Image (cartoon, rainbow, N blue to C red; front, side, top):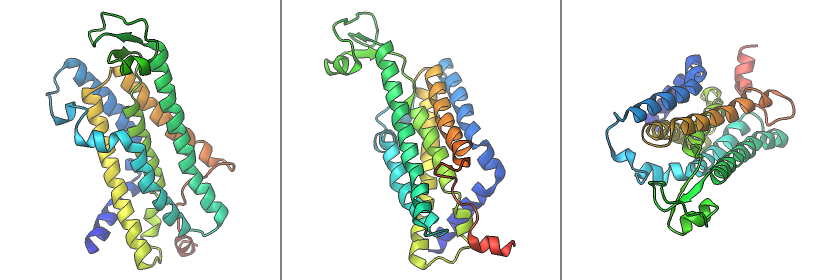
Amino acid sequence: MAAVDVIVGNLVSLWRNPAARTYFPAVFLVISVAGSILKELEVAPESYFSSSRNALNVYFVKVSWGWTLLLLTPFILLSNSSFSRNVSFLVRRLLSLVVATAIWYLCTETFFYIENVTGSCYENNTMVAVKEEFISKATCRRAGFHWHGYDISGHSFILSYSSLFIMEEIAPMASLKKANISALPKLVLNLLYVALNLIVTIWVLMFFFTSLYFHDPTHKLLGTIFGLLGWHLTYRFWYLKPLSPGLPPQRHPKEQKEHA
């Protein structure tokens, strides 16, 4: 698996670059604004990704939180346990998954609520004939009509938030490259690490196409801001406090002894 080791080494070097971690959050704001401008100017050509039925959207983005948890849960457990086998430490670190899931749920439910209370049911997407007998998106859509409300982009939120969440939680890999880990756990960690970086690449790519082809500019910008706020308030504020899941461990005990 030498090829995997090389890939992991290159990815670790990328994320160890302070500029990569510093400017990565801003990338989403830049893409959101630039993509929205191109969409409003109607200069982006139609493509495979301008349809919401493209494979990446159907099989990845629509279940993006599931993919994030599926790959990140075993990675957090394995990577953090190599720093400490203390049960309370591991439970605290795994709570970051619970917190992130709560943020995902609360934000998406808030978006659904806002769209519901600000919307109306129309006979079709021309938004001319109002169907006043339907007062919720669910009943309107079930009847085969079109609901139009203030639709904050859930895609912009979840793709930016998931990417930043993964960026923070894969940070321990930089120290684990030097740690004495047995062959099988190391192989599993390496494969999970590569898969998580691949997922982040897909999330950024699909964030770009969302910005380029879908939603109104304010819908995308608000979704992105919610994603960045969810990350910032946890990893840049709350997780620095004692009563929190805490930040991912950054330096392995072996490294600490070497630098003592």
